[in-house]
Amino acid sequence: MRKIIIDTDPGHDDAIAIMTALANNDQIEILGITTVAGNQTLDKVTDNILRLEEVLNVDIPVARGFDRPLVKPLDVQPQAHGESGIDGYDFPETDKKAIDMHAVEFMKETVEKEDKITLVAIGPLTNVAVFLRMYPHLISKIDSVVIMGGSVYAGNILRRAEFNIYHDPEAAKIVFGSGAKVVMCGLEVCYSASILFTEIEEFKGQGKISDMFYGLMKFYSGYAIRKGWDRTAIFDATTIIWLLHPEYFEVKEMAVDVELNGKHTQGMTVCDEVWHGDIVPATVLLSADREKYVQVIRDAIHTLDERAA
Ligand code: RIB
Ligand code: CA
Image 1 (cartoon, rainbow, N blue to C red):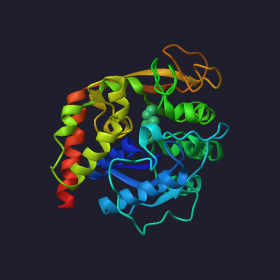
Image 2: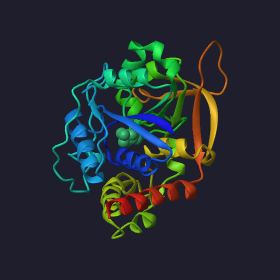
Image 3: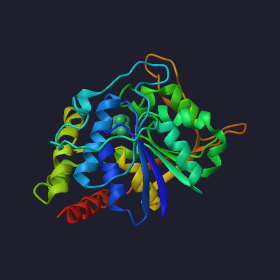
């Protein structure tokens, strides 16, 4: 059983990543969920995860993290995720509350108690960077920091930068340079595993969770539709599908640094196949078996439909 903490800014694809992990709870145990500002404000993304847990009938500890990046100003993305941060499905109210502990302290206390933990970071890296900088002695207990973020050459917020890294580039630079083993699920692999709009339609009317998935993905497809594409990436889900099926992916060990300045490049992950010095290379995912990737999503949502029935 792999024990993980998910650091997140839900976020449509965040929600699907979390659901994919929950559906595969025979292989993955989520010890806690920490929230970070990114797609929307800290209050909104925290409210979103609590409401998602209400719908899924689970009680995973939720700890609030930072409400802004380390240096840059907050830069929420309503055009991609809506005013709520997870538009497209009418989530119920909930009495669930976040625990009275900061995300970084939750990470510290949880990692201390376990032999090995995987940190899954699917939002800006503000919380993870501070945790690794404050408690470097705990890095030996982290088998990997699996992030959705970065790119080898693509960009979705700038021509060469991906949103999670762009939103807090200083934090990302700390994480990649921390000595922890980073697994980078960047834009290229996420785009290669995109779900077709026709495949999204198959979920409509198939069950309670299928209908949630359908509503979320119909909204989240807006970016791809505006680009004239016939498919959309479910970016954050890539981290979980990597943990479940690494064999679905083509990877390369690369030294990764982060550009902190530059009109066109702030937040760019600079990935090198050759490096010098004692750099700990990241495992960079390059491409995926799309059919198998999408089938994991189908199976997960179907499993959650059965549990909700
Ligand atoms: O670039 C994709 C990332 O930005 C995903 O984590 C998505 O949730 C948004 O935060
Ligand atoms: Ca996210």
